[in-house]
Image (cartoon, rainbow, N blue to C red; front, top):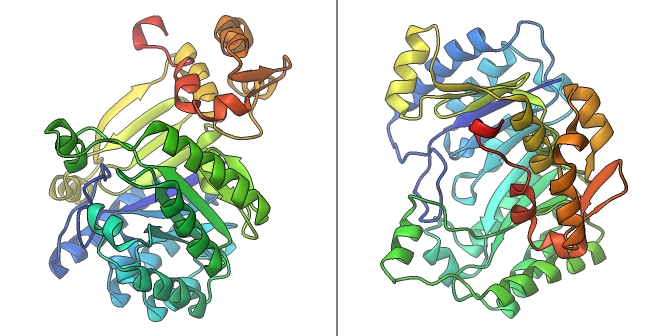
Length: 380
């Protein structure tokens, strides 16, 4: 099945840790041109009559659009797909731009899930992360989404902020749980290349948080959320009443998807392509046609098989090796048997011959374990 990703690149502020393709553009004309280009690209790129497995409006900050433009965005999507019939339609929101009116507009048009980027409730860490909201604003935004009709609401939190203590993270987690979210994503802050935070670290202005403290935060999160009735279905994601995020799970299962918008990526049948990132260049290409694609690659067989393991091992259910071999028609266990055995011998993974999954020790080193299955193009 095919999923649809829609990239809305506007933000009220560029956060220092963020490497997403986003822009601070407070210009109604630019927003209107973006919507026109998006409509043109969607009509060309989405297969006519195809029902999406899921739809995800990400960014950037989709909730930053004015009520009128949010209506227009959703009408554009409804011209190509039936949002109301789709099992999961998610909109990403940041607290400073959420209103009950916008929430009600989204629900009216078939959006049935919201993801609220809180990151932290601590005022010092909010300033450090360049967030534009306050703790009270985050709680008010959560309430506005509920009042607007959302009964499947996810919260994003971030731990491991430089200087953060375990007690401070515990307090953040408790404050989030007190709101009663239906899903939670809890990410360890990472220093992404090219970000302001990474540059500050290179200048010696910022140090990464202590690894043992981050480890304690990770373990506490899993224990506390399990006690609160959440299921850790992926390294950083926890399903409550709202269940897992179908869209993200589709990515981890190496599903096919179409991405529209500046910098959006797509994948179909082992071919991956990415749109132009600059907003104006993407809009020019999308409006002129026939394509706004900047780069494309066809994954070689070993590459594709390795990525299936790299993505799938993040899921707590692990990787069904037989299912991957059947789907790809490739001898995955033959090709990667030695790499799998090495991770098992190191105590970082368990494998019964059919299912490969991270061990408890491997959960703490998931990126390292996953990287063991990635191979370069020359070896593919």
